Length: 449
Image (cartoon, rainbow, N blue to C red; front, side):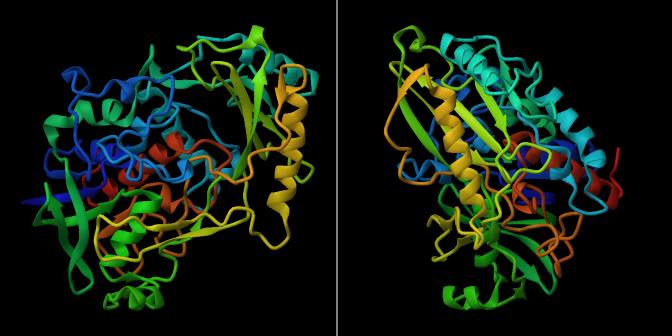
């Protein structure tokens, strides 16, 4: 099987890239996804939990019993089928990466993503979350009419949902272009095939059987956890790591798998007052508090995420501009083997991240005072916010167009190229990055329309 362009990974970024590149009917686009393709929205083939926007499932997770902060979905649409549908945006400085990537240049793609994902205001407001917003105002964090305003405060999260249907990337981006894109589900990428400094195709396991899919150009959208192992199995990455893996070094690229950033945090758990107890069919999370620690710049650097289930409630606290960095390491040539993910939460030498977390925990206790009886201590283990970025970062690993340094026809166009953790949920930003990368590629390849 041969295509002009193969997109590896059918998650949020892959769907957006395939949609953009397929506008030109002169090129053939193949989209490879390791998990199943449940078809278009109107085919009624989607499992109910994956289209219910009220809670985040893990039924198609690569590692269903693993840590939630390592979660990623193996299905067309990727983690956009498993997330909380939050369309929360970062502060303007978070999109200033270089001369080619500025807030002014990226925001139009953000706005386009918000429209395409059918983002709407939150409507099903419950007593617990109304009480949280009111309590935040008492603490000097005013209610925000738009939680995406560039200021601290509390507000109701906008959702990419149509009613209670999770309007994930496969519905929003892939469904309109399915006649122009060849979607290959249950197709696991093993490694890239090379001829000199060019990639010529992707070795895959398609429904368990080996196959080589050839292409003129390859766009990697396997995510911050998926791209580094694929490149390592292909002989691209830090030479010392490749030698440990037993892979000949085809191309030395030190930054692959390094620079992992996510929003680390902890959870405080509580028993809500009876009048504030959630109903079984309520959204678990509805509100967001954006706050400033004692070390903050002019923008917020903390997210407090209140939640409520039947009889239980609490608040997660996340540091939104972490200094700490981690890694994604590959230990097996088997493409079905899971990578070793080390987030490196709160490992920065100066302890900056930990101080911000302490400030956030103190604020969370004040926030819940009077609303619930808080447990004695926050959860002992650090967790993440499901927002991994940076493992194929723009600069160390790719140029501004996402092209891998030293390999002219392989590009990366997903969250792994984002060099810093933006102060927001990364779903919309990842799609905006993918859409802009694909636009740059279309222009470079002479297919811009």
